[in-house]
Length: 314
Image 1 (cartoon, rainbow, N blue to C red):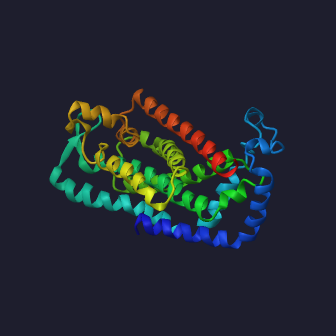
Image 2: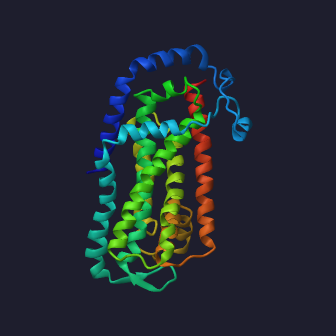
Image 3: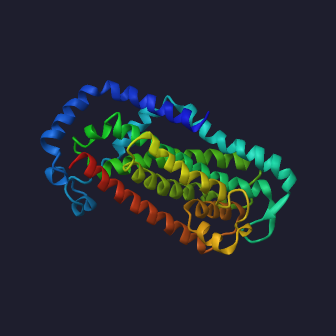
């Protein structure tokens, strides 16, 4: 099953929920038009008592992003095949390249420069790519459908939830999906004896960091999209990273100026993080990778929140 098939299934499931809630959206949209259209300042009463909520502007965050996660779970619980297909894609790459092509390649230079089996070199990179793809797909295509066609967020923002609730809820669901893809593929790696260190126990938490950063960045970009054709730009960014960010061969094959460019790309840092954990080559530099993803995630959440406020409340 391709990404398009999975995303179409998600949109169909979402559309079913949207169709059942048209009347509710109409009422909510009317409320939005009458009282919410003035932006965050028009919703002064929507504030909870938590310490974070007292710091944020009124109407920005109600601490109920979990409602979006619960809704996503209810919509997708019948689409379990999408999860399976998300795990199978990197598995097929691993079988064809790691085992088939790897039998001709033999060994390549690992994180410490020492030779290692090609399949063991490739597998953690595919795991990082799996986390990226799972998060990006959910935070872009599905969010765009809800924003532009199902008009889900118009109804959501007419309730006590604010733009930050929407951002946190949708990104959290994308992280869950990316984490499930990564966890499933990690079990495949374990079954194929492609894990060489107990540090691999930290792969799933690291994958959640990666998924969160990509989901936040993806959702932020989605708020600027005008039509489905704009998603070609997303693929224009994702595909080169997948091909050239040390996924299939060591970074050392590039000339030094090109290495500097690749080293700043998010997927390269994700690959290095996963490869270091699964092979046991752990160092202080990994904290730099984590900090990199925290910055991307923070900027992505902030941009998404401001854009939703501008698009739907002002």
